[in-house]
Length: 613
Image 1 (cartoon, rainbow, N blue to C red):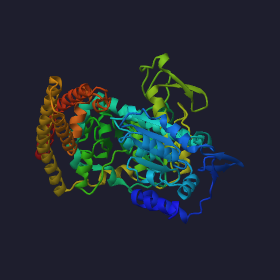
Image 2 (cartoon, rainbow, N blue to C red):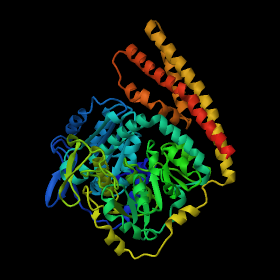
Image 3 (spheres, rainbow, N blue to C red):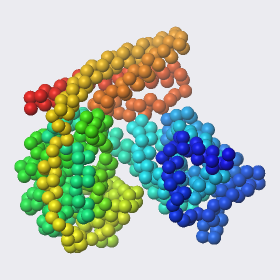
Image 4 (cartoon, rainbow, N blue to C red):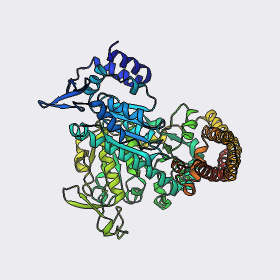
């Protein structure tokens, strides 16, 4: 059997998606960009050679590539267990294999190969089966399955391990593919930073977010989900995303012509100004758990259909009890379980950090490929932050960041605005089928967007009228009467589950206390400790089988912080380490135990209010 036959057979079994893409490529007319060849080395083995612009490059040492691979792998010998390592490049797989063999059994690996030609050459001339079938290794090839990179990074980089994530390039790859290298590196950095930001946000708004997620379920029976509107709106025209930057004042009058032509989605902070000018968007979006309710003080804002996330401020959502609400995204799997009753799915859409970026991802989910940004300044004006307001609190001079402006000049932005700007730029580089027009006419320059006044965009699309808002309003609620009964039964089941969780947590607390007593007493049999550890692990596994555990975990996030990540900071002394871990886990379980009744009472409240309604 040839190398290729063996590799492709293993690929078919362990990575069928990539296998399918390789098979489909056989029939394509793709032109090779990199001319690869086998280069024999002094020690009798071989490496990959590549010709680019009439110059030959060698993907490894021409003398002793095996020793080179061993030396490269040794750089990571001290990486702790439960780490995530992302490498730019795969090559012949020799270095990759040495690294995987060297590191701990719980380390996750992702190898991103930027060249299909190099990958196919490796498939034909080297044994990649070890890497393909290895359960902790993921291979991504640009041009084939690279659209999964975001999802893979998001899956592997978690609250528990984000401090143990590493990025590196295999030899020569950084130099040969500099743009692709920077793109993957930036994606990696974004995933790590986004995880940290999520932890920080969760800790800050933890209790309120849980309250919102549970109490917003009261609105399910007069609402819709994102999936209800897929394929409903005409996408032969752009969607307009209206943010509340100061430049909105420049083109607010042009927005009058948008109604009925383009789908107009406004962020919550833009609503007061738009309404004051007599402009009613087709849809509003609110995301933040702690968003101020006074944005909806004007009753006219409450007649606009509202898209929310499951953790959006319930005080706002409850104001629209008789109006149309769309659940656009959910942070926990519990909502997906609810919507499965209606044959729907509820996913967690990429956030990007701001309500405007959330609106963009929602529009893309509904099929829009042309997106127009209005009022998305992402820069600091001299005297205001939002359109229609004067003399707002301005950032201190030392907190201002100089960046390139919309017109090529230098403008100043803040750390959070700059984060959103970078999100747009990375999003566009990763989604090349999306055309984004920046009609803000001021503020920061967003690389990758087309800068064009809103008036010109409107003139380019002489489209027929469409009642976007009316289409949303007349859509029947997601759940019919029979399905509503099933939802209520699921809530009742959650009440029972919380009682069961409380019992499991109580047993875990008891086991960890006993373990600490044995360790501090210094007289115990190893079998006793193994038994306790096994019981605690089993209890943790049982807890994670309940969807409701997510709410308990969020409720204690602020007090307990990054507990699981800290547990992985192993110490050398076994007794000291076991005692520390038990103390941490005991505090963690105790904290969850103490909030079970609070979460349970929220579910009971949802059930009671729904039954009365």
